[in-house]
Length: 260
Figure 1 (cartoon, rainbow, N blue to C red):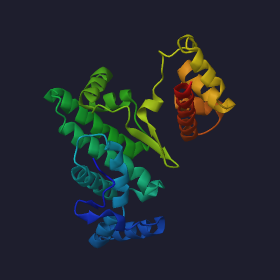
Figure 2: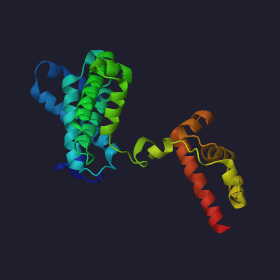
Figure 3: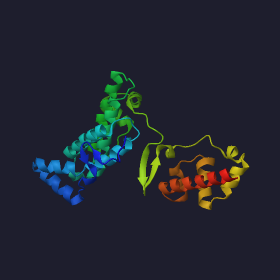
Figure 4: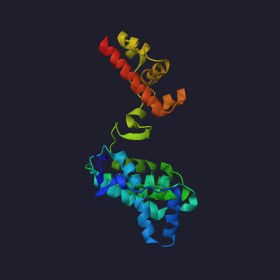
């Protein structure tokens, strides 16, 4: 799915307007007064937000234009249901709505067959979750969702798992300073042990050629099997920095091993 192209759905995405918070608030005030043109301006002014959200689904096989249009539906629902009295940024409210709309579309177009009963339970659970979030301003637990729709929580979990789209380990989950963090960076490695690594003396020598910080990151990541988030918490830097240092350390080690 090529999201870096200039034209998407027949429009030049580089010329899309970008609204500041004051302009958004003014448009919401006009919308509440019944101004339909203000709604169109607010939709147009948030299309960049839709573009940024659908990049999360870059590894899916869906056409970018189709996902963009589905994302726009989520944006319109967010605009129509946004409550300014909650004192929450519109983007904070809109992003989950857009993501949810895209995920529903991908589930409905999933080639894996799911029974009608499971699908019905899942849709009820998703609707209950959205209503709970709107009312309580927080994510509900599985038990709260189950109570809301009158089902066992095991049935809710099974139904939601059945319609969930498979995720690629290389799906970007966060971006900071131009560095993409992928799902695989969040996975704990329980198979890699220090005993397995130190069997190769040249690899051990390559380790000792790293800086102290790089050495600690590689040790924590691959000797102790910790996630990048856990490593970041332990050495008090951001996960993006851990990712950048880890990649640099591995690159230096590969260079040393190829030359030795």
